[in-house]
Length: 112
Image (cartoon, rainbow, N blue to C red; front, side, top):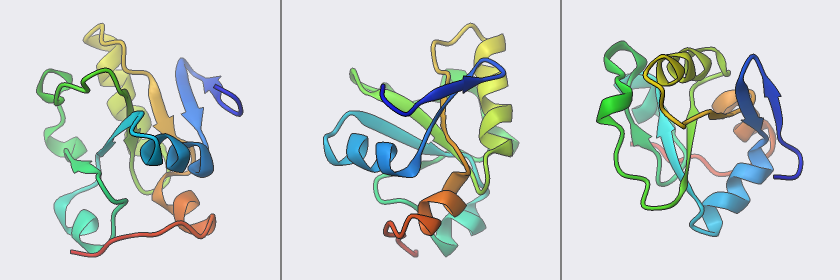
């Protein structure tokens, strides 16, 4: 996709690209932050699967969508992608800069 890049085997997409994907129904967003962080603000439609309990085998069926992992700033989603790679999962994409980049782009966050 336009604007995406790979670093360390991980494909990074920007906040605006993710927003377009979500709006078009092309992405399944997995938020790997802890439940309290998720409750304090998350991206609409995100599924919370904390890194502390993360297992690629437990990911929901994406039904043809691109699975995108996301955390606060990109570190934990990268760690989750490392787990996916070890499990030989095809999941390799995360939000560059995490929800911080999403907020910096002026995109909406939901509380609760």
